Image (tube, rainbow, N blue to C red; front, side):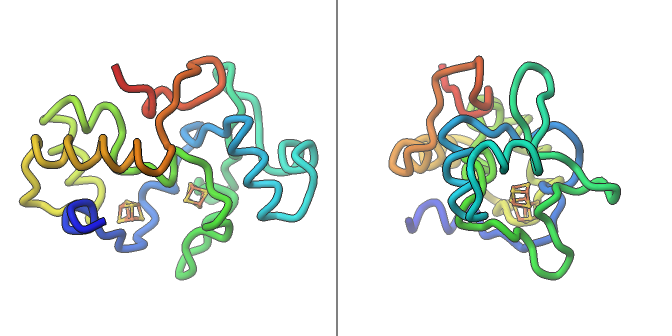
Length: 148
Ligand code: SF4
Ligand code: SF4
C-alpha cells in the first residue's frame, strides 16, 4: 500500500526482535505459526512459546532475541509470524500518541523520520484494518492491536 510503504520500510536491523515477552501469540497466530513450522499447534506452543503475563508468547533465546531471529537473515518464520510482528510499527501507542511515534522513530530506522503523526495514524489504522490485524480479546491477543 503506497501510503504505508512511504511511511515504513523495514531495514532488517532486528531491534524489534530483541527483548523478552513482547511477542504475543494469539490462538490464530499459533495456528499460522504451526503451519509455517509444519508441526502441530501443541508442538509449536511447547517448543517455541511460553506463558507470560497471562498470554502465550514466543520465547527468547540466550542471545536475547526471539528464537526465530537470525542475524543477517531476519525472521525465519516470515510467513507465519504473529500479528504483532506483522503490525509493527502501527501499534496503538504509536497511532494514538505523537510522542510515542517520535520515540518509535528513534528505535526503528524503518519508520520515515519525516512522517507526521496524523498521516501515520490514518495510514496505520487503515493498514491494520485491511490486513485483518486488529484485535479485540485482551485475554489472549496483543493489547497493542486493540484500538479504542
Ligand atoms: S526495528 Fe524497524 S527496521 Fe529494524 S527490523 Fe524492526 S521493523 Fe525493521
Ligand atoms: S517472529 Fe520473526 S518478526 Fe517476530 S519477533 Fe520473532 S524473528 Fe522477529
